[in-house]
Each structure stands twice: as structure tokens, then as C-alpha cells.
Image (tube, rainbow, N blue to C red; front, side, top):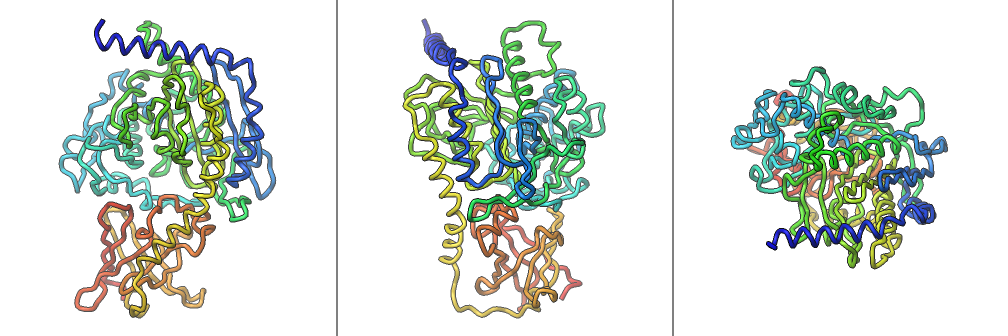
Length: 555
């Protein structure tokens, strides 16, 4: 017996033990977890949560609690629709799987074969990057999410600007050198689906080729399609852990970044989506000719290893096309979740458990979705606020531990409380770094020196600096003059000004989830012969600052 066969037998024995331990899952009820789920939701401040569990191919648990609208006290139920954020990406990769099956695409097609993609900053990416690279986050291009962020209808990037902006993304690493998450690339693949498919809109393709045949009747690529009002509103959380509603983000199949995060869905529909993937995986692995009749195509390719994940660990930590792959127990479990790592490893003494999963987070919503192919199981958790550490993440961990009887049992509620406090303290940590790096007693330049418009054509962004006469002539900055992207500007030191939030609540209200380092709040004005001619803004930590040239028509 060779080494490969021995390894396969060990894995098979682990799967058999795992299945034996989970065959009794239907005999006990996951309902006993509800008090813990409710406690975690309250501690994180999130108004509502909806959960579903599939096991051995059957739905064994659904649960919803709290409010879909905290201001109006409207209750949530399992049919409440949520934006599923980055879980949208799996619908994009599944669409590509169908088009590959029909011969209209190849996984290794160059991006510029189907759309006029031209990467200005990286000729190698321009010449070599493929659909596979885009789907597996392997292009090496920087994420730069604050340049398009949405809040209450404030979208910074127009649909007509997407190709231009993707062509100007800076390089984070070499092509295929490291995993580098990139929402722009999924939006670009949405354009490729439109270019080669029969529909003019990627959303229409998803609706006709995936949602309709699967019977996912309350899932859509545009929230306005849902005619009833059973939709979860977006919220932010106050310091006292009460939630306040803010407007839904402007994301749909008609907006620039819709293909990375715009789909609305429900717990029952996402369980249908899970079951379809698990069925397709088994059919394709069996080599059964009936696969040609399944809605999903090339699923094994889509969920298999395409790139190395973000952690350097012995256990599997890879990424497919819109799916993370990991084996539990793993010290890196939590790195890809809002709750983060814990000081105890989930399932440390249990058999290997393969998980295929993804998470999602966008202005006022979080989603967690897991597949367990060896037991034909899945979990989905949807919430309507980021809160103090996503309760959907912790609810999923509770369910996984219970469903698979993981040993030793760890106190997930305690870990959730620690993570919630860490999330609450995040602004104070950021503010301390900000204060510690500030040079005191430097002269503040006159407001007239810096007032004006500063343009970065690559990102189609204009930073406007102005005195607000209606607000006691306070200095402000605005991104593309969007209401939700307008902030007070204060002197930091020398020729550097800051738009750092005045409080943690302001940070959450404006959903600055992509601002993780104090330097992202600084605008460093550039002078030539004492005249301000531009400014530098660090959009993403670790990436050189973007330069904004001053409009010569402004003072």
C-alpha cells in the first residue's frame, strides 16, 4: 500500500467516525441553543437573526428572532429577506460554471478576451490574468473598497466607471503570488457573464438559469423585485447595544458593484441553494451521466482548491471560486470570520471535518454560510447589523459544535462576549494609535490654503474640501459630494488633516467597516512653492497613498 492510499484510508475512517457521531443529530434538538443564540444577539446589539440547518439532506432546524426593523419594532421570521453580501459571489461562480459547460467560457480565458479590460498599473496582470484568477482572488490587485463603498444609497462608483477603475487598481502582490480579496474583480466577471451570455444583465442570467429552476422564489439580484415588506432593514448599533435603522445600501444588478454583494435571499432559499450544491457535488463525483440534468455545473471545480488561503498553517486553508475550504480543527479558524480567533480550537480532539464556506458583510448586514459535503449538511445565518462582532458567526459555531458533537466542548458564548467587547473597543484602539502618532503644536495652515477639489481620475473620485457656511464655517471633506461620505475635517499636524470619526457610534453609523487603520483617515496635502497642488490619501493599509491632483480652477 502506497502513502497516498494510506492517507486516503485514514481520511475515510475519519469520515466514517464523523458520520457515526452525527447520525444521532436528528434525535436531539438544536432548539436548546436558542437561549445562547438570543444572549449572543443581545450582547452584540444586533436587532435580528435568522438561521437554518440542513443535515443528511433534510432541514432539521430553522429559527428567527428579534426585529427586521428595530425602529418600528417589526418582528423577523425565517422568510425575512436579507442582503447576503459576499454570498452573492457564489452565484457569479455558478453562472460561470454553466457558461463553461455550454462552451461559452473557459476558466482560463483571459479577462480581456471578453471585455475591454486594460490594467494600467500591472502589464503582467493585463496580459495574463484569467477568469480563474478573478474568481479565486489571485490577481494580486489591491481591494481598495473605500473607493466604492455604499451607504444609504450613496454609491461612489457608477456602472459606466467599473472597467476604468479596475484598470487603475494598484498592485498588492504579483499575479498568483498570494490570495488577495478583491470585490472589483467579481464585478468585472459579472460584465463577462453579460458579454457571453444571452442576457444583457448578469442578474437576469442568475434569475433565469439559477433562481427560477431551483425554485428560489424569494431570492433576487435587486431588492425592489420583492413586493412584500418582509425585508430586513439595515442597522447600526449604539453604545448601549440598541440598534438604529439606516437606509439600505444601493446595491443591485444595475449598480457598479452589484455582482460582488447585491443578492437578497432568505433562510429557506439558501437551504435550497445549499442542497443543490451538495447534490451536484455527489453527482459529479460519482460520474453519473445524470449530471447533465442538474441546474448547477462544474461544482466540484468551483469548490475545489484554486488558490492558497490567507493563513500559513499545516491544515488545509485554501480558496476555490467564491468558497473558502478548511479542515477543522484548525488554529486559523476565525481568521476569516468577524469574531476572529479564540484561545481554544473548535473541535481540537475530534475527527477531521471538512468545511466549505463563505461569509458576507456589507452596510448593515452579515451572512455566514457553510457546507459539509461528507454529511450532506449546511448552515445559514443572516443578521441585519454588523454589531459588536457578528452573532451569525457565533451562532454558526454553536451549531457546528452541537451538530458534529465536537470535543472538547468550548464555551462559545464566553468567546462571543470577549469578541463583542473587543469590537466595542476597536475605535478606542484606533483612536489611541491616531493620538500617539500625532505631532503636537504644529502650525495649522489657513482653510483657504486647502479648500478646493482634488481629483483622482483613476478611481473617478473627487475629494472636495470646503467650509460649510451652514455649520459655523466648519471645514469638511466629501467624497464625490455624497451625503453619507461627508465628514468634518480637522487639523492633525503640519499639512495633514483628518476626518477621523468623533465617536464609535459615528464610525458604525457611517459603516466604515473598511477603515481599519488610523492612517486611512488622514489627508496629507502636497505643496509646491508653498502652494497646495494636491493631496495623498492612504486608501488601504500597506498600499502606497493615492494622489489626488488639485483642480486648477479651485483656489
